[in-house]
Length: 314
View 1 (cartoon, rainbow, N blue to C red):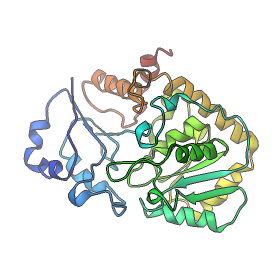
View 2 (cartoon, one colour):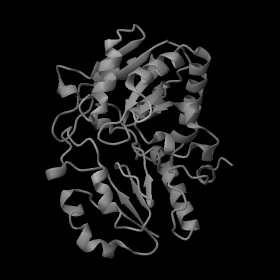
View 3 (cartoon, helix red, strand yellow):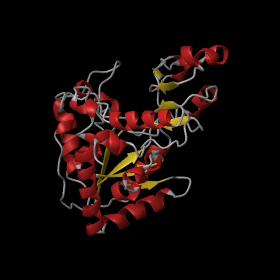
């Protein structure tokens, strides 16, 4: 079996309609990387719906792994891993410093950018406007780095203390708002798991990953809401309601800590210096599942029942 990893950018995908048959090969799995900021498809804060990629992905029958905003019968939606250490001025092994957060703080926390999806400012502004002492929400680093917590090709990484301050706030909180940006995954989800804070996932794909295949439910680890079902006011009320339930908060925090130890810190890529890709065992298990099913994608769920076998946990 081959895994083909194309450079997904404006120039490449524009050629798919003419050339897709060369990639339609038996026993081949495609992996589409995150979007590159090129030309028309530049990630400038205006691209709030990436389903434009679906018309290209639908050319293929092969099983496809992607972190892009795409729902299709042959697609396995793949979550993001850790932020690169050099982008946040951290040690290359920073993800091994797990915070065993088993305390209750009665606090909802958020730092980030409100510009990457149109739902973000609606959620953030409403939470701020309630002026609750239990809510600590601010746009990231207003005066420096243009609200950014990380560096990239366009800007240098922030000083080390900036991420440290953010993470200290995170680990001294109970809930963190994980609101989709220009993708349905966020890097802050992994920060939450490491800090032992409960993600409040809004318009993301995390609830569809297939947690039941490792004998868990999404509600064991995080809250999740769709703005197609819940209003902003209802999301706020549900968060405050859950925050008052101390036993529930501590139960979920314990589950997060155990999941991080059992599945993330034991990941082969994490242990073997490729630290940011913390889902490699899950990817291997899913590929093995596809192979056992004659290279057919029976289930779109990212978490395969075979992951425990891969990890030797059976």
